[in-house]
Amino acid sequence: MITGCTATPYPLSAGYMTLRLPAGTRVRYAGDAVGIRTWAVQPCTCPKCMSAIVHGAPASHYELHPLDGDATPIIHVLHTAAIPLPRPNEIYDYRVWATPKATAAHLRHELRRAFPGVPFKVRRGRGVKRRQLTVRWRGGPDATEVGAVAAPLLADYTNPDRRLPRMITVTRGGIPHFETPTADAIHLNRR
Image (cartoon, rainbow, N blue to C red; front, side, top):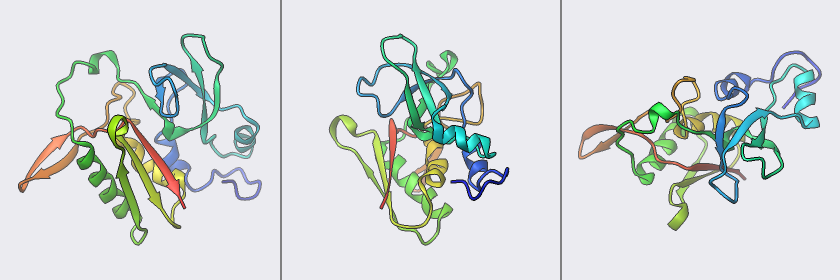
C-alpha cells in the first residue's frame, strides 16, 4: 500500500525485500494447474506495480515466464506464491523432513510470536494436498506481513546459493530435533 505520493517505501518493504528473488530465478508456482511447469521470475510490469515503483515502493508481485515456451506469462503473482527450486548441489543433500503437522505447528507458533493477540488458524490439506497449509486470521496484519513470516518455510530467500528452507526445531518426547519443514504451498486467507 502506498500512502500519498512520497518517495518513501511503505512500512512493509523491509520484510518484503528479504523475500525478493532475483530476476531469472527458476521457481514453481503454487497456483499452477499443471504443477510440474518451471517458471522464471521477472518483476511485475502491470500498471499497479509500475505505479508503486514510480512512487518509490517496491513492486509486490512477479511476472512468471514459462521456460518451455508453451504458455503465456502469468502476471501479478504474489511473491509468496513463487517458490524457488533447489539448486543442483542441494538436491542430494541428506535431510530429515518434518511432518506437515509439525510444520503447521511451527508456523502457528511463529505467527503468534510475531503478531501477539491475533488469532491464527493454520490448517493442513488432505490427501494429495496434505503438504499445503492454509493460514486464516481476522484483523491485524495484512497478507504481506504474514507472508514474510510464512515464506521462509517454503525456501531460503536470504542466501542465493541455497534454496531449501532452513531447518526448524521439532520437539518429540522432550528431545529437540532439527528438521526441514514440509510445505508445498502456504495459502493466506485474511477474513
